[in-house]
Image (cartoon, rainbow, N blue to C red; front, side, top):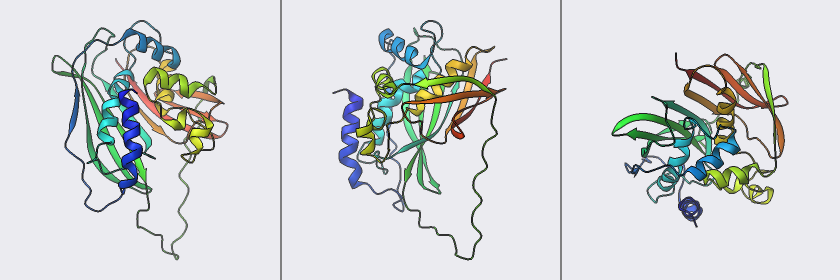
Length: 278
């Protein structure tokens, strides 16, 4: 069993004993540090293929996040972490690369939790991953993960109903992607993230999903691979996950200027924006 699989198993054991939204809950100050080391070419090539990146050239912008994810899981499944890892929903991610990275770079990774935030549907934790070369910060990501629970707030019966959130503007279609049923298993093999909700309809239904769904990080990576054909290195990205992408399915990648989105029919699955050098 891999380290990430062990973390998932530990999370399954510890989650029932954690109560999200507990008053006074605090995050442990622990940090996970992965010492500098060579990036294995085989897993990187497999990751690049499944996400649509070129198998030569700079390191994909999302790859250090994948490298640090096992450490993030160790933190989130530790006894002192206040939220149950089972049922956590990845809600957003921000990535910034302060310089171009290459597969030969030996990155030191630091992963830690950086705050609990009340959310209308529960409690959100921000997880941070930092990459350094010779002690210099060269890359960083921040991710939000939502633990859904009752918040204790109610709407007075006399209050007018809340307006539904405004739909994001529909961007011009740029590409159509046909996502096969085994995409979650292929991405899981390449990234190490074998969360059951992504692997098979049967395992997804155990967690309340009618079908298995694509990894959010695959969706972001695929968008960046598509956008990477434009001028200038992509320096940073912000993506918000709006709705799961069921497998199999056909979705549309749309983009205009710095903005992009993934939608299926009239449903928007992801919105984002990026910045380029220069």
